[in-house]
Amino acid sequence: MMTHRMLIGFTAVAWALLFAMSGTMTHGAEQPTTHGSGRFLIPKAVASFDNHMLEIRLNQDDPRIADKAADLVERLEIKPFAHMQGTDTNQPFVIGEKGTLDGQMGYYLTDFVHRKAIGAKLPDKNA
Image (tube, rainbow, N blue to C red; front, top):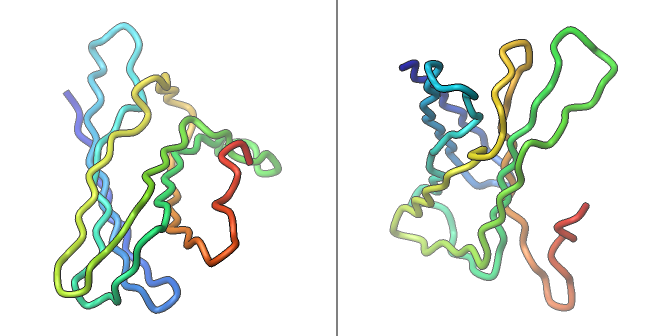
């Protein structure tokens, strides 16, 4: 069994968002999958918000081809998504259960917190 761990931290719109992913892939299985689990953490110092959407995308790219956009393996939406200042928000997730792992490809996650303003619509999930 081989375990892959990565930790990515970034700041967006004055929010200190921390994303951590820990996944396990069993290479003895017939078809290894892109399955991974992790957590999306918003620290307690961040201002409160509600009625947002958390979007996590698992992408696959071919490092041998520079001009090709990444392919979407799976897109996960968590809504409504909210945070209360003074407590950490820790959102666990599982992604990529149905994808097949290709050893020649690269994989990465992107994550977004979308807000919904008065009269605005959340992004189309088919976009």
